[in-house]
Length: 130
Length: 92
View 1 (cartoon, rainbow over the protein chains, first blue to last red):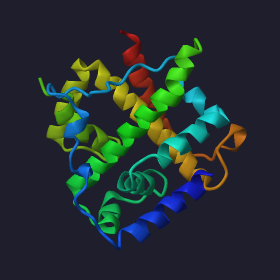
View 2 (cartoon, rainbow over the protein chains, first blue to last red; view 1 turned 30 degrees about the vertical axis):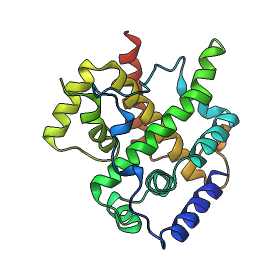
View 3 (cartoon, one colour; view 1 turned 135 degrees about the vertical axis):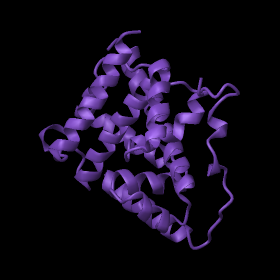
View 4 (cartoon, rainbow over the protein chains, first blue to last red; view 1 turned 60 degrees about the vertical axis):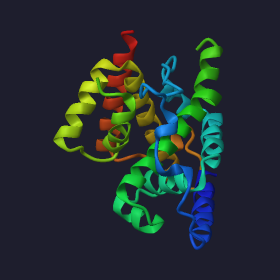
C-alpha cells in the first residue's frame, strides 16, 4: 500500500517536473515559526510508548493518509529520502534544487507529517486514556 | 538563546548525517534548554523509523511479525536515540 503510494508520488513528480514551477511557498520555513522563533504548533509529549503504534494496522493507514496530503515536492523529497534511501545529493539532482532547499523541503515534510500524526493518531491515543 | 527556528534545519540534518562541529554544538545547547525541541527530535526519529519500515516493506504493510528488519546497527542507534529523548521528556 505504502509502496504503491510511493511510486504514485514519484510518477506524479516526474510528470510534473517537466513543467517546472520554481516559485512556491516551500522556499523557507519562516511561516512555521512565530515572531520569537518558536514553532506555531509546538511539539507535545505523546503518551505511553509511541512505538506501540507500529503494531496497529490503522497506524500505517494513517501514515499513508498523512503522506498523501503532503505538497508534491515535500512528498517527493521525503519519499526518496526515507523510503527509497537516496542520498541528499541524488535527490537534489533529480528534483533540481539546492542543498539548502532540500533541507527546507525535508524539514517541512517531516513537520507536516509529525503534526498530522499527532492530530490523527497520537492525540487520539491520549484521549483514549493510554 | 538560539530560537527553535534557527536550529530547525540543523535538527533535520542531524537525523540524516553527521553535523559539522559548530552545528552539533549549537543544536546540543539548544536541546538542553528546549523541551519542545527534545520532543520534536524524538518524534521525528520515530517518524523516520516508521517510514523506513514502510519503505522496506514495499507493497505489504509491515504488520505483526512480517516487519522487515532494518540493519541491526541502524535499529539500535534509532532505539537508543528515541529512548534517550523519551527519558528526557519524562522528567517534566
